[in-house]
Every structure is written in C-alpha cells, then in structure tokens.
Amino acid sequence: MCPRHLLTRMKTSVAIYPGSFDPVTNGHLDLIARGEKMFDRLIVAVLKNMEKEPLFSVPERVEMLREVTKEFHSVEVDVFQGLLVDYARKRDAAVILRGIRAVSDYEYELQMALMNRKLEPRLETVFMLPGETYSYLSAKLVREIAQLGGPLTGLVPPLVEQKIRAKLAVASS
Ligand code: ADP
Image 1 (tube, helix red, strand yellow):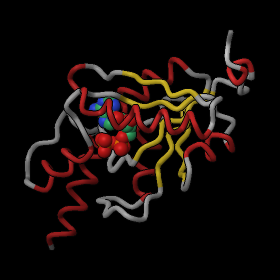
Image 2 (cartoon, helix red, strand yellow):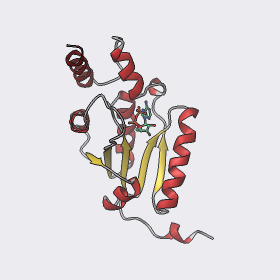
Image 3 (tube, helix red, strand yellow):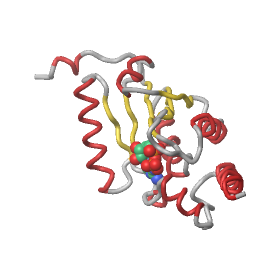
C-alpha cells in the first residue's frame, strides 16, 4: 500500500537547484543543462548564507548565473534564505535537484534529502551525475586555483573567469 502522502501530488514539474554558486562552474552548468531538459521549469536558487566568507556577493553570483544561463528559457535564477522546504512551498516546486560528484558527496546529500523529506514529505530530491570531466570540480577548488594563479580554462565559463581575475586583482591592489 502506498503511503498516503505519496498520493497527494504537488502541482507542477518545477524543480529547484539550490546552492552557493560561488562562483557558478561548468559542473553546475552541466547539471543545469540536464535539469532543464527534465523539468518544465528549473529555478537555480542562490542561498543567502550570512555565515560564510564568500568570494562573490549574492547579487554578483546571481548576475553571473543569469548571464551564463540566458539561453535556457525555462531556467530562472533566484535567491533564497531560510529553510529550503519553505522556499520550495512558496515556489510550488515538487523537486529539489542536487548533484552527486563522488561518494564523498553522498553522505551529506543523503542526510539533507532525508531531512527535507521529513520536513516536507511531498518534496522529492532528485540526484544527477555530471559528465565525468566535471566529477572532480567544485567552486571551492576553483577559488583555490584562482587564488594560487592557476589556469581556470574549462572549469568555469569565460565570463566567470574574467570576473574572478578582476576580483582577485582588486583584492591584491
Ligand atoms: P560547490 O559544492 O561546488 O561549492 P554548491 O554548494 O553551489 O557548489 O553546490 C550546489 C549543488 O551543485 C550541490 O548539489 C553540488 O553537489 C552540486 N555540484 C557542484 N559542483 C558540481 C559538479 N562539478 N558536478 C555536479 N554537481 C555539482
């Protein structure tokens, strides 16, 4: 017998792809391209997290995301704060999209997905795998390579590379 909550559908095929996106990488874009094919609407939601020390401000991250996703007409970029399940309810989303790069992502993602399910049983988390080329790529690694003067070609879109270089040049002047 099907659990009762599985019989009540949330309305549309709207998915939320939440994250820090500090900055957006080609790994994120790979996932956005896959998600865009699967859902009617994909909301890329930048978490406004006061505790972290970011490289880019939230408006800067949003601006870069909007620019690099502009050819995807069903993708929207937004900002959220607080509980993801509250934001998902507000946006009428039925799905949370998350990426799994390696086994190391799995434990944290599992914990988050199960907790979100406890908070909102109608919300499903869907995991997607990026292309192998991006399975080692994280925004944190991109920030570290950039700070150490390494090449970013192929890791982030050209626009993002320019913005990182400009930001680091200002920081070091
Ligand atoms: P990061 O972990 O790179 O700092 P985020 O916190 O912005 O990035 O991650 C948001 C979501 O995107 C998470 O589900 C994360 O697993 C996924 N993600 C990040 N980088 C990649 C990648 N290279 N391939 C697939 N998924 C990724």
